Image 1: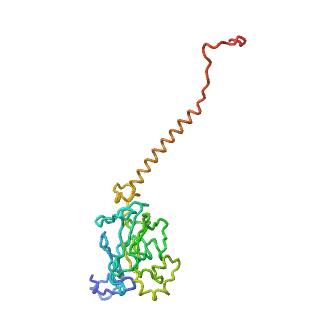
Image 2 (image 1 turned 90 degrees about the horizontal axis):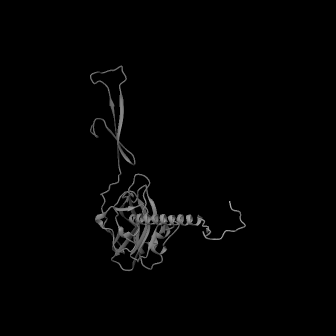
Image 3 (image 1 turned 180 degrees about the vertical axis):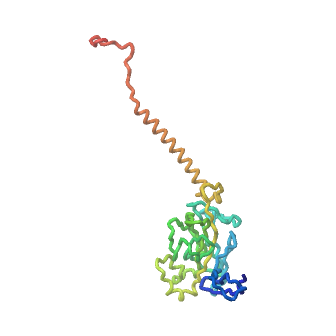
Length: 294
């Protein structure tokens, strides 16, 4: 039946729009009835909010424009190794990695105003392309590293380079997105958020108004997804990373062969040491005349 006719009622709450109606078994040819008619109430609920993803597309630089800082961009990229010479090709997304494989990331800021510096305040991983996802894992918070596998690499004022071991979310999630909160500051100003660095407690509210002209607003940027592969897969996304599964398998094979060789050598030597040798008398040696002969 149509949503707006046949007695359908429309209700709503904070999260959904609800349509309700009742199906009855009354006989329209009769005016009265002495039987209990069947009445079946039903409703249809439509959520007001939903998450939409446009597929696995590499994200272009994020562009912003703020008073006092002009036009500036943030670019978030994955790289193939810790040398940060070659970024992952945009056509190869989603980026395929194995569990515990090191992934290398760089956030770079480009500004039309000189003497600015980049600050990465927080980063979190989510299984969906939604920074506000209910399921998330904190990597960096208030400028402090939270994940024990994170490595910070030498960077400049305009970029931030870091790496971490790949992981997966528990449950039916095969993709991981990385979202970070970043901002630009006036370089050398001790009153900006960039100069404060890692802050263990959330005590930024008192200074945010005073520091506003010397720094931009916080902006959320993300990149992904990373797709987790199983060891049964033979494809290696980035062999130049130096810590991929192919290298691990090769090292494990060499280690196993070496163990077998060492064990064989130990067993061989132990058998030789257990064997006792006794010198036999020469055949032509004289026999003691005093010794009784059987």
